[in-house]
Image 1 (cartoon, rainbow, N blue to C red):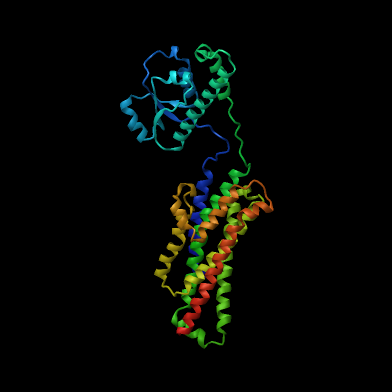
Image 2: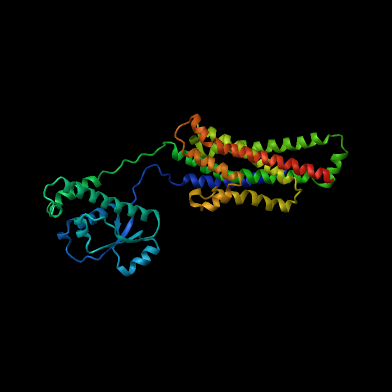
Length: 384
């Protein structure tokens, strides 16, 4: 087994490097309000001094968005390259529509990103509050004709007071940043654990499956069941040594942030994932693959699931169909559990119930691999 420790060293070095780079990234601990960048194309050339409601709307946009002045011929390219998130077209009759109490809908083009949605929500909120304020002001006055135009200053003042009432944003969990760092480390580690255990277990079993070694084993006084048990025990000790090594490594790489009760959930998750990796490695070993074939199979069963499941790229960046495919791998459930742990706000039995289904799926994978291994081994003995 000593001859394979270089594999462990290489994968642990890769994991450590990726983790250090990730930890050095600036953490986001505060809420930062984002101002979308928009361009306004006005179809109204008249003086805004005579249109107080339109003027107030533009003041609202300048306060809550970053207005980029562009020529109309430049707007399409700016939108395509996402220099702006929205082109807003201001109609000539906007003031009259507001005064008549109509529901305001403006024409626009967007880049389709999240800041474009924010722009749309800002505009929608403004005109909903504007319409509500107009109706309330009309209902409170006995004189209905020309009331809005004659009392525009008061209505606009009341409207702006409503618009200034913004919610206070608080982070849901004080531990969110630390838990995210822990999750990122072990998400990277999912590839390391699977690759190391598959490589070493398959290489060791391949060495014992050589015909010359098999013949010596068959004529020896050692019982076959005892021989297989000893080999399985050795592989199990190695697998759980990898588990212990990476758990210990997390203390050195992550530091004091692992000193949280939620780390118990992480350890349980890693332990069950290690068991799934070991049983999968034993299953692959029954096919008596050559050393060259082992390398290909290991890449297929460790690297591919890591990419599909979000080990290197956060799952919210991955298409839904990719994540659907990833469900067939233990890696997905391991990473999904890590991500769920980051959302927990208190250490309790109810929190454990949140991740329990994923842990049971990992156990189910191990059982499936064990049963498949037993069936294949029995068929091979019958054929012999």
